[in-house]
Image (cartoon, rainbow, N blue to C red; front, side, top):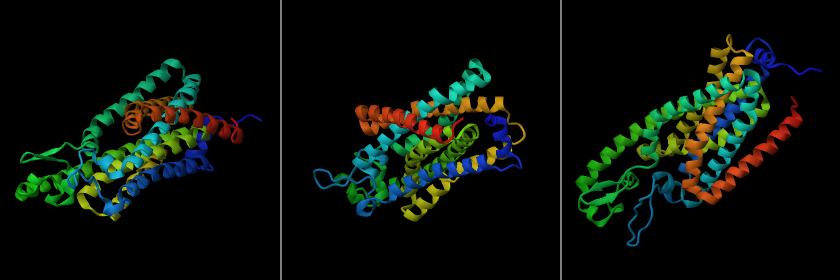
Length: 338
């Protein structure tokens, strides 16, 4: 018996039919969005009173010269996050190159597929230019110089001059001014990072939606790797919020809300694409999704994995992602043959 076409699946998902594909896409996007909340939990669930950025120096001084990301999570969790980014990159690259792009090329031709692939990469580049300057400041905050004493924002967040070098302790007024500046900066950074990541999550939700409409074989692994990727995004959202508010409950609430923008992307896509989505347009949009995934892998996931897990573990994680994606797609194809 002939399997249903893409148009049939699209009609069922977007019209008054069963809506099964749309429901599955919504559930997968919600699952992917949970990763952001998990990232928030990782930030607040730290020993010693969430000792953000604190490390004891040779003279018992609690001071850090590493990024807030590293000092908040600790070395073992940082390496784990790096491995997860490498794994996600491997899955995304495999899914883009060996499944999505060949399918799109078969539907609309190689040239249109390539053009839409570049559109996806270019769109993500534009978004990164808007979001990354803020998230770079968040994850890699510059050191602050107060009266010849160099500290980072984690010490300012502690609210205690004695947490810094000895020369800083005699300059409580300078510390107070710097702390006020730090608080304002972290409030602004947390707000802009939250908005930027929310927009990013809407786009990811759209990607899950389109992939699921095409084939569960695409939607399920994509949702899984986005969930893993969102754990780090949740950390990026949670750190400035925690440094600005020191409120663990608020951190968890806001990171969970941020993750809910993922299924919101599914809802928006359903309304926007209901009357215009065709076989050809779906194939073109999927090619742009492949471009988004390739950009995220090359520009975010692999560099972050290299920084936090090292070259050897990054290579192993990427290869593990390739192998895991192959096994997962083979299993899904056996259960849901095309």
